[in-house]
Length: 462
Image (cartoon, rainbow, N blue to C red; front, side):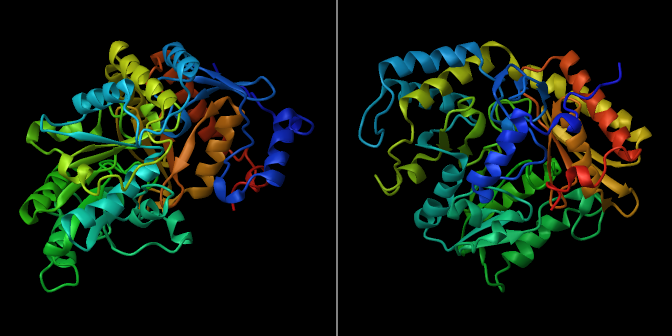
């Protein structure tokens, strides 16, 4: 059945949604975020959210990979209520808590590797990555951290500085970070093709960036910090053997291998963590920053890994609200729900369905240049020409806008803002996934047929 408009722009004037949008313009800092449409929010349940006018939308973004268990999962809501009636806050910096110990045990159990681990608690994925920036060079007594082009690690100064994505360049970064080319095979920085390239990007990392005659010799490098799938950079999935090479470089030079799982963690990729895909090879991160989906929506982050690093600088990294009881109760319930309801297996299966459908659409629509991802962490890169790979940035914005009009929330990412960010909640059913894919196809067709004007998205396309 052809999807129909849920929100007609002719009804926008005088709506509660428009009232909220105009209020945001006058009262909310523009630096806080960027809208792709006029979406407002009032309530949510499962894989659906409602706007202020009562319109319901299927969600293919999970609020930036936060709502892995869906919106308002009853077991998570109940855990929050129970804890709120007992104790709403305590400073975990100086207070012992049983539920924090329980969460630490769960995180140690589900993260890759059987080695000894400890857990640090913070408030956001940004400050979890900031811990890597602040603590690792001090612990290793080395100057530099290597990160990658296209990476995004958060909004604090340390996390910004680690990032290789375009937005952090608006703020002057802190020193001590080197950017290396990521294995973005669809747009290889060396203009080569995998696997004929022989992983030149990995050779470049070891021989040129860290060469003993260059400015960053390996004995001065404290960590190589990366996303195993770059999210905001374009849902970029590197070859497995590139990840293996990077880990071997770390082992060779006694460099810490630290992996940002803020978006990919908690079942999103069809395993508990993206790093689990390499666990059988003995490739285990030294430190893993975690956030977003950890609590299903309450601020909390964690770093799990090497006890020696996390014990370093005792008392120097605590937050008054880091590991607060309501957030920890929500996290304990979230992990139980993912475990008990088989959401990791569902993420794997639904990911296969979604990528399979996009690959079929790719045969029909020239605008689809590349389809990639694992589990329910997927990107669809849109181009104006498959040979030149010219990014279809404006078309992507229009498709995202049209999806909203048709009742689907979906985001866009990428260095060129031309990648559909396909990350629905892990509870999604096949019927819901197919409905969402029908809407995306209709939106794509409408945009290619010229049914979405430049004026319609003018406020969001700057």
